Image 1 (cartoon, one colour):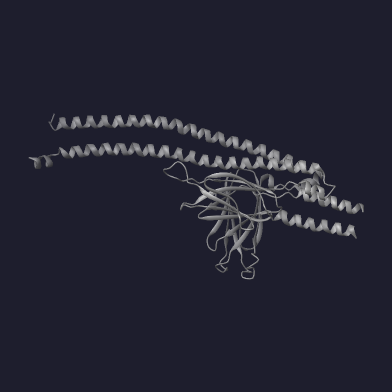
Image 2 (cartoon, chains in turn orange, red; image 1 turned 180 degrees about the horizontal axis):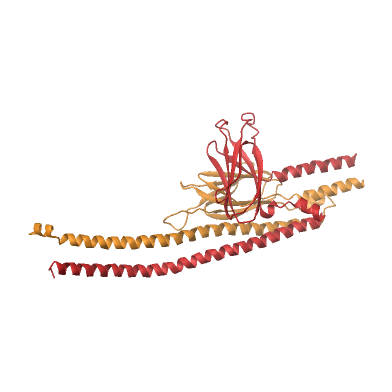
Length: 212
Length: 216
């Protein structure tokens, strides 16, 4: 009888210590459609994450039209849709357990690099506690603390991706300033040189004779 | 009888925990031709652990029993960190020596019927997520609540390190911004000077030219 209780206690502890996983902030190049799949263990888990479009090689306009982001549940329903965005955070409660599909759609011809982060978090609730009397409420609090820390880490990854995009724009501005200014000086010198040559030709002897 | 059942349930659950912990990974669809690459910007001196395996879709597992993929992992300066051909699963681990974009590329090998869809399961752990907590627990002989709190302490330290790293990146970017700002001002004023100088030179040269031609 005692060993049965011990077995169930270990089982309970294992349930709580096996927290649902997450993936590091990976970047993927989206040409047309890129889909990433992540498995959600329990129904009711909070799936959170963010994505940022990093490569923004737009020449003239200041803002990219953005990409579309669609999350589908294992049953085929669309859980979340974000259209025309260049970076967003998302969070939803999983309606069922199974394989969720996270898709990025690029409606334009230039390939974009998207950096994304997905985290599936599980907090044992009163139902799990009621099932096994040996589960400590401390474990619930620890799980909540872990989820709070994971959300801070997720924000940091989002900040890092945004910082990478900002740095990309900054370095592009720096290069443009130097290149375009030097090109402008050279073109100015060439234009004024061409003006002088043209005026000289207007007053050259051969032309003057023709005028006479 | 009940004890045996309970212990068997524990063993099954441990097995399930191991399976699900190792399969908490993302799945990627591999195109029939061309490569699929994932990358991450990692800074110096960070442990990277990755595990990849080909997933057989249940419906057409009988269609491509010999489907294999090839993997190549490169560092930001182009060094080859891991290269494997004709494989269905594998893993690699390294500690970063350069700061930059690390690229892992997958492609389908030639001996594969077109039309089938290959899915690769990739588990990519960087930094604190790659830490081997089991060995820490064994070494320090901690378990239960103390072990969970030690893991949380590690997570908090990782957050702190990340914040410091973000701060240094922001410092570099601010320096570039301020340099660009100063340069815009200087180059605009200089462009005005170049314009005035060029037109003055033009006027002086044309005056000299017309003087020589005895026109003025």
